[in-house]
Amino acid sequence: MYRPANRIYPRLAYADEAAAADWLAKAFGFAEKHRKTNDDGSALIWLELDGSALMVCRSGLGLSAPGELSGVTEKTICYVDDVTAHHATAVAAGAEVDRELQDTPWGDRRYEAVDPEGHRWHFAELVGEG
Image 1 (cartoon, rainbow, N blue to C red):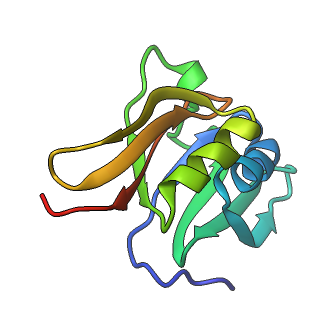
Image 2: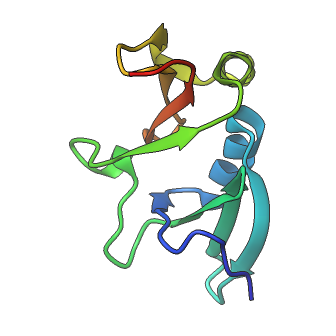
């Protein structure tokens, strides 16, 4: 059984968890670490980015994909080593960037994007002192 290094990690619901895992790998650089397929064909898929894990699953059991709701209830924040290169990869993969790269007063360079099912992602790199 896969056990992520971080003891707290998000579990994000998607209408199509397998397609979501593939897209997150292509656009944002996540690597699949483990997949558990259930009897009904749904899957729990653990992904990692720079040693931090998240799980994607099919909607149900109290979780809904953003497209099934009237609003988004979370944003996942990820720090990466080179946010400019990360942004370029995401854009090339078709990510919808809703906040372009910018430097903040607190020392981050960041951008925000939305995945194909509506989850919001915030990627940043520490570039200065805030």
